[in-house]
Length: 199
Image (cartoon, rainbow, N blue to C red; front, side):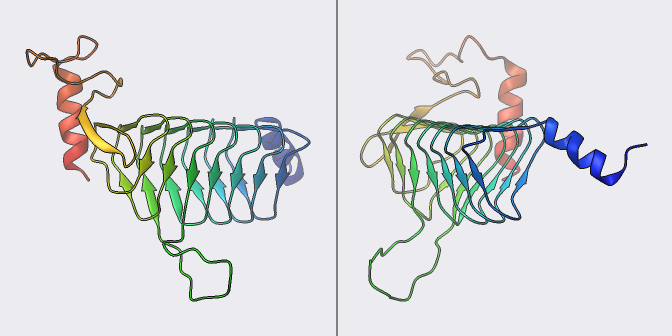
């Protein structure tokens, strides 16, 4: 049987935090997660299991990130953002949290943003606070997300607009003849509909 100290050491061996990373007090990092060069994780942030936190990532205080997420290099995730399981956030994506930003003192409140499971956000995108991006949605690189994006939607542009429905695998859901993505099957479609109805 391990002592409490031995157990803590064993848990630390199950994750990798690069020596240049700053991890503040009260941060929770799950087993198997890797935190790379010069990342800064603020107090009381929560990061799940088997995540990758890339170089130069900034994660603000009280941010919640689920299991199996990839937060690529140069991403900024500010207070008020919740990221569920298996989300990919591409390089240099920025999340905002203030609808009326000012440098001088003013009444300020955090506007929450929700990124649901399986979402992919392309490199260089900006996610304006207050939006909800549904499960398995895909945001094209360089987009500015200013409104909610439904589950299983492909959206891109400035502002990001709905382009088509997609599968969990990321392929376009329907072709011009109305056929399902060849990588998917009836089981996948049933899973999609049951997950969508649970939200």
